Image (cartoon, helix red, strand yellow):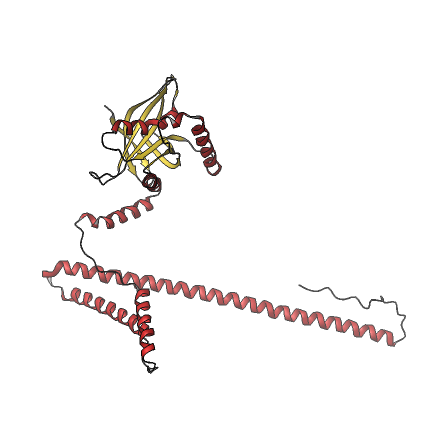
Length: 345
């Protein structure tokens, strides 16, 4: 019997890709890229290479296809190591043995002639009518090729832990799972989120329809779109004021309601703080933009003054040349005229 030792760390994106592939093709298989440290095996990437039957993995075409895919992966990550393989499918009733043989087939890529070679086998059992969940299993296998058949023996069972590479991503995933599972409690109805784009679109549609029937609308009256958005804003302020009033009242018989109101006020104040921070950031960007425009304008003025200096210099040289001709000096200047000053750029 396989012992429960060691851990296989599976990144969420790899698990999601395996499941998505299996949902599209009814099954999926491939190879796992990763590293091993002590009793923990960490998967970092995967190489899909699904086989149709158990005999496909021992063909030359399959071996060449796998070699090409591994080479392609090494173009982006040169130092990759294949630690095992994965297989995901839905076992059909009464065909459990065929399912196991299909899952074990990629072990041929890790087998050696009359020599045992270890690798990781990750199994993903897709949902069935009796079980709607996805079941992950992982084993350390010993693979040997005796020439006629493949022997794949499960040596050690591993616990499968779906974790991200960074702690921050794990916190985010835990929060998403918690929200999805209603914080571990029973599902409860929640208010629909107000979509301001939809509110404006519906108001604009009503305005267009109203304008076709009556074009005598007073310009001083607010437009339906503005009125609809102001109505949403007023309702929000009323909800915040109501929540603050409950907190100020301090009625002990409504502790649950107080907690909800406190959460509303806290979230509202957080949004205001973020909005204020964003506004200051916008002001900083605006000031930087104005400074850049001022620098550009100053550079343009400087260039204009330099061109004026160059023009006056050329004019002065021309006048000196003409003055020299008036005193009867020999005309030894170039036939092309006086030499121009070098432009200052």
